[in-house]
Amino acid sequence: MPSDTRANPKGNAMQSDAVPARAYQGASAKERARGRRQRLLDAAFVMLADDGWRQMTIDKLCRHAGLNKRYFYESFATLDDLAAAVVDDICEQLVAIAFDAARRANEAGRNVNELAHETLDVVVGFLLDDPRRARVLFTEVSDSPRAAAHRKNAIKGLASALAAYGHEHHQASGAHPVADVASALLVGGSIEVILSWLDGGVALTRQALIEDLAALWVCVGEGAVLAGKARAPQE
Picture (cartoon, rainbow, N blue to C red):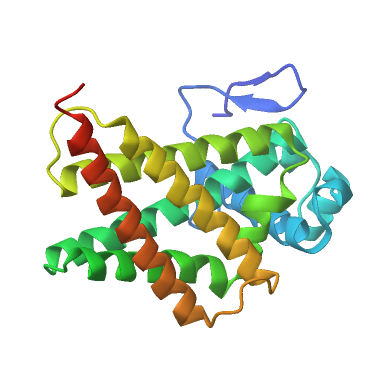
């Protein structure tokens, strides 16, 4: 018995809710759509790194991804939406490996200096092993308003998570706004240092860069704890 189909506003056939989408070569319709979306994200990442945001068009992107143009609109409404998704994709990977590294260091009983070094070794390594990640995330998407907003929110979220983690790690009681200031300083400052290092503006080896960043993270973190404790009685 043939499936009951209806035309959607774009003129494409839409299956009835009662009829499940058929699998094709072992993959369901949703899985194939996710695969096409990832191909677009991967192609956009390469194009942003190579040519920048201003050179990107939907036609170029689809040719690079080897997909029909209609598949772009299957996942994204505009190029701004795509650029924002690229930012989210990189940020999600970065946050996941950062917290996984911190968790493993904690479980291994590392002291604060070792924890900072091991976590930053993984995080900085993620950005430096493929420098395109840092450039796309922190520079190339600046001309895309939506992507820039997503990046800003991601950095803010990372700083907030760092503040919460530091609060828990040091078993601080009460609210300490200085922790938010310290976290924003560490995240934002580290980004600028990494970009400067990639451009040759910081004359350090990669390992020395990580060691110095870790040392500064510990100093700023412990300083924030002391400042918070000193203010607590007054506040």
